[in-house]
Image 1 (cartoon, rainbow over the protein chains, first blue to last red):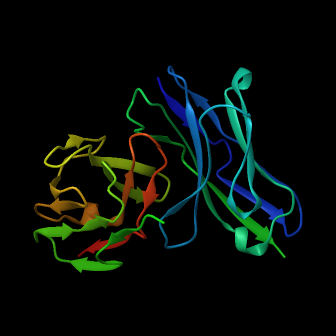
Image 2 (cartoon, each protein chain N blue to C red):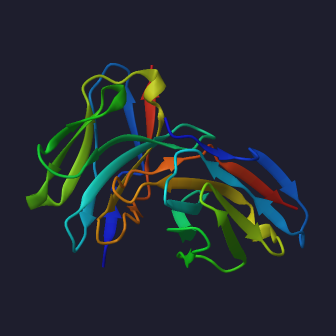
Length: 114
Length: 112
């Protein structure tokens, strides 16, 4: 079955520390992968996406993610988090075959310690 | 930038009322989606549409219907609102050649 797993429901990180949010997927077709961020009470904003090519992709707000096909993973990273990064982060997978109908992870809530 | 506009940020409706949630996008996207988001349940797809007058059921269509009479507008209809439809409703749109969704700001619906 197609699925996306974000194993961490909550992550707490000190301001200025590095961050890695995990995403694993199970998908039959060639996957296209996305990370979105949702601030409280808001809609979701696209952070970055991977379609093909370089497996390390850069996004907005200083985020990057690395596609590792052998591990079926697409982890999100940031070298130094800011208090404004506190939000919920969603990983999603889709494909051209599915007309880009996305399958979503359950989300990881990021808490920033001052 | 593509903008997806949901007509209301907050709504309070009574049980049994017919409720319309409106969503408009301004960038000629073919695809439009309605999700509901509940704590601990993530994003669940209600309905989606790939073209005008076309609709497809998502994972949880019961109690909902949709309308897409124009390309830019996708309406979600709660035929007879119930308290278990209290939720955050998110509309999104996308291009078939691009895949990334653009979301509206959401409508938080409370049914009392």
